[in-house]
Amino acid sequence: MWKTGTYDGDPRSQLRHDPVQKRWVIVASERGRRPVDFRQSAPSSGAERDCPFCAGREGLTPPTISQYPFNAAPNDWRVRVVPNKFPALRVEGELERTPAGPYDMVSGVGAHEVVIETPSHGAKFADLPVEQIALVLKVYRDRLLDLRKDTRFRYILVFKNSGSAAGASLEHSHSQIMATPITPRTVAMELASAQEHFHLKERCIFCDLLAFEHQSGDRMVWMDQFFATYCPYASRFPFEMQLYPRTHAHDYSLLDDDMLLKLAHHLKEVLRRMNRALDNPPYNFLLHTAPSTLSKSPRARWWETLAADWHWHLEILPRLTNVAGFEWGTGFYINPTAPEVAARYLRQVDL
Image 1: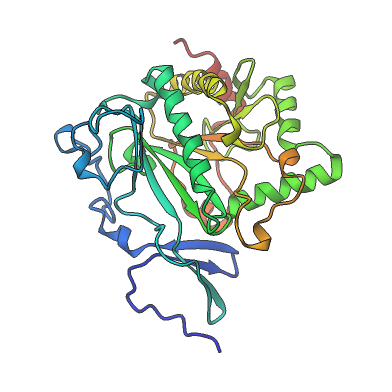
Image 2: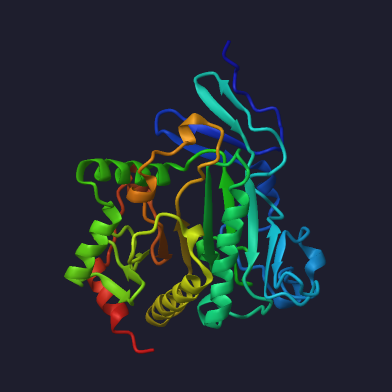
């Protein structure tokens, strides 16, 4: 018997499925309590005197999940991980899948964590010492490994919002980690494309793209011995960039400390070029890595070729334009800056 699907005021998060667009939406009523929600212009509410992320104010956040160094005093940390005070998904609860009329609903089980990247309030991520950036990247790896132990989770996304226009509600440098009980549509599309390409050509699609971009050079922003960053051929936004390891690697969590330090050098270079060229724009970056293979769901037991056809990568998205009616109505993006022009401009930046 179909349920009516009416809302009974339950404050717990839900994941609701749109059967026409085939997308999931998180309905997180509790996040509506955030002071920045629903303002037409949401100023950064991160004045240093009030900032809960600064050292010495650990009592203003939920209890620490982990901190680095591990044996540091409570107010003597370098990087700290805490639960999000206004989580979109919560660890507590059972994973339930229920119909609601012609719709489907999944209980809002997951994880939502904040990585406080530095105890210093005014420090920008790109200006942190390389060793500090490497420590943040190590935290991402460690949290991925820990969260994957929970068999309710299908995917874990690491992302950073920098600046209020990019969705940051506090100016203190931080990033976030979310574990979801379903695979996001964007990731699922990438996984399907990677699998299809590998079955057809027995090669990684990302390795093929990277090899072509290296040969062409037109859209390459920065490349060293280990990593390469380029503006995608079909960039959705001006100065959009993607960062890949040059040697095939499907899982970010397998990086050792030495490789994380090399990644920190590369990421710092790319972000500094972006900040110099675009006058410190708001931006997002997000990590697409291999999905969890521990889920109890048969559909989440990924195919045997995953390690061969998937390639982890970072997407860096400066927030320079607004998505408007045409984009929402069609799914097309209008990019006013050709990626070849953007890449050349970033290459020529004088640091």
